[in-house]
Amino acid sequence: MSDFIVRNWGNLASVAGLLFSILAFVFAKRASKAAREARDAALRQSLGEDMNVAARLAAEVVAHLRNEKRDMALLRISDLMDQTRYLVGRWEPRLSKKSKDSLSRAHEQLRSMHQALNIAGDLTREDKARLAQAGQEVSGLFSTEHGAAARAAEAGDK
Amino acid sequence: MKDEKMVKFFEGVLSKTKAGKIPWEPTAQEVRFIAAIGGEFSLSISGPEEPVIMAERQGEAARIDRCTLVLRDLHGRVLAWVTENDEGIRTDAIQELYETARWQAVHAGERIDDALEVLNSL
Image (cartoon, rainbow over all chains, first blue to last red; front, side, top):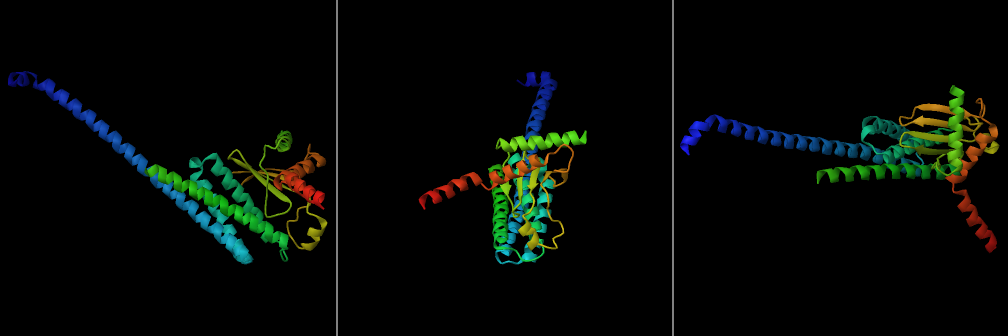
């Protein structure tokens, strides 16, 4: 046995080296996969947080409309339009077609709400009803997107 | 070239609307309807405001006085703006688009069925 080792130590060292290289490659691959998964999880979490900001702004819009605080509603609608632009700019490559459609719809609804609130004079009862409905629609869209982002983050964690 | 594309785009929206393929929905404005398509674009169609509404809103800066179809990208940038004054766009065609989109958005067909039921029960 010792003769065999003495005669073949060079070959044995090469085989051992090869085994260590394979192990190092496997571990590096696993580490890289873990790092990628951690990064994806952090991104999903961050998308969920950004959607949460939008959902909260939308809820504020609904509350201001309900309390007939027109100036505050206009302010929050502008904030939410900015947040929607940010969401699209930041997350476009990661959003599904359905999510992008939802953000487009929300943006259009907000634009319409802004114009409807910006008219001179008092709002009619019908105007208020349409604004309330549009506000609920926008709030629902962002809540759904926030839920989808949170679900994706949870699924990624498992 | 630009006019040809605009006419083609308008006719595409009209035919897909008639086929019920565009999910038009109401907005906070009585005469405006919107739809998102393909995860990339949004459409809005605005109709002329009724005289009584316009009279109530004297002083409004951007009063809508004709049918207008607007195409925007996902970032909200206007890509195309079509009105009945554009070359190759017939007034009756854009009015038909507005009326069909409105009909679908407010589910007018179903609501009229409900109204007919009420009428029959009187």
